[in-house]
Image (cartoon, rainbow, N blue to C red; front, top):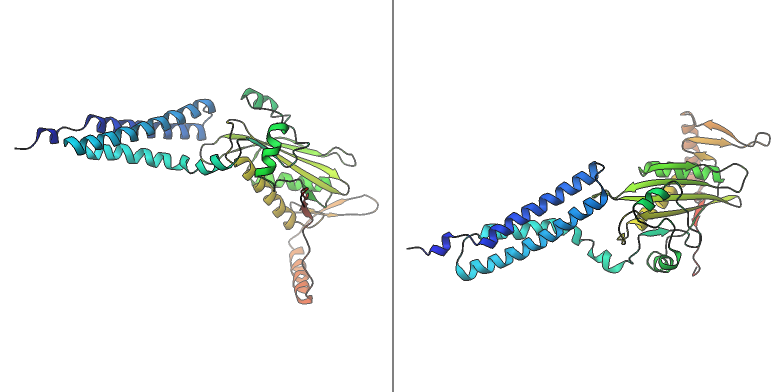
Length: 315
């Protein structure tokens, strides 16, 4: 005669599996709606919080159910295991950010110029509506940023400011930023150019704001970037990573174009008209290839990049 308890499922095992399935469904629905539609970010954040809390409770109920099954001989070990494993899978991705949460400072706004950071103008209204600061909190964030991200510094390109602005625009386009305002620099004046854009995080699709300022620095151009989260008090290093990606893309644009060449255009300078623009034809490529081969045979050193970062005070 079999024990009657072995034919009865542990009540907590059933609740654990149901709660785990519900929490996973809430997570998927929240991610899909926020990533693919105009679903409000605060509501999506609340759904993610509910999913995380439900997953944690499902794991707890599953562990208690396994203890009951072990001690009293209840059935339902499969349901309890499902209620534990599924939440652990859904929580595995958020748990990967725990080291960044513990190591990096709790800031959500970074810039390459902490003394005079670029300002949001076109995006100021949207940032104010989301409850985040429009101005960079210099007093609170600057010391923490310099300690955590000492490599974020202004970028100097030894080219005219108009040419560098075109390179910056090309870099933003290649990074798939959504440009909301593009204000080119005024020729022969001290006013630089500004680009304001938005970018989204890869998985959840949180919207972050970016502003790039290009201003004259003698015969060169100085590029400063600011990236700020629109939601949350801790960006987990995402804004610093975005600034680094932009500077790397800008460096690639500078290296790919010689002085006077921007986005497939070659500038021919003359004493009368100042500057003329001539498209690079396909027939120019063989001669350029010959020049490169001649330089390699002659043993001449390659041309150094015209871009550099402003040295830090320690340097």
